[in-house]
Image (cartoon, rainbow, N blue to C red; front, side):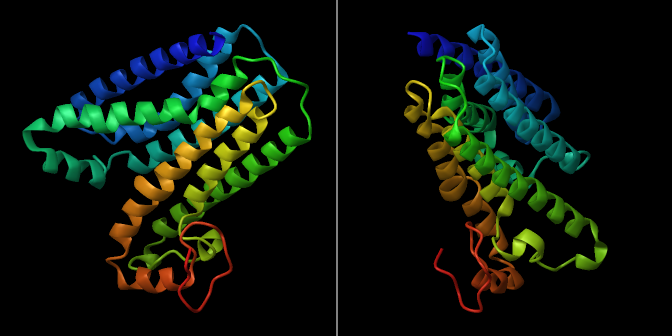
Length: 263
């Protein structure tokens, strides 16, 4: 019953937030605003369910800080990247493909879809903000270390890519330096890894094992659906990227090879 109430609070938070985003997207004719709202939405769910819990245990505050750091960095980075550039090419193509039904389909597939994903991904956070757990222990430390590893890959990977793209001398080239030498998607690897870290922090609380729904959802979403596959489909049209792909792991960081990797 307690978790059901927390889930209801999270659901209402997500429902209101994504409906507000949808209205803003209609006014701006820019559905890519949802990408900026992605990180913000996680912060809202975390803070609202924390306030609803009426408690402030160390584990709850720890996870709230981690989500706040991750969400703010992501939202600010995407805002700066998209500012003044109009709607992202993915959403433009969908708008064209959907024709006169673009409003309804955008609402269902972009905004409602991401809202559902957010609810599933934040299950470990809801559990942490529902049930009292034991004092922090070794598994929590491992979870924090895993989260830090993921944050490093995401933040540093994004920073390296942004610097590469800003350098005019790199026009037409493929980013294969820094973390990008070991994985074609260090930022996606980092995002997924962070949520596995959050799950480890949640594991010690009652019903914490159910929190695995969160990292499994984000892993499937990024690795098999909207993240890696969409970018790979676009980038594989570039012969230079094809050569880069032959020596670089698609997701997990691995030493570069001279022969194609089966990863």
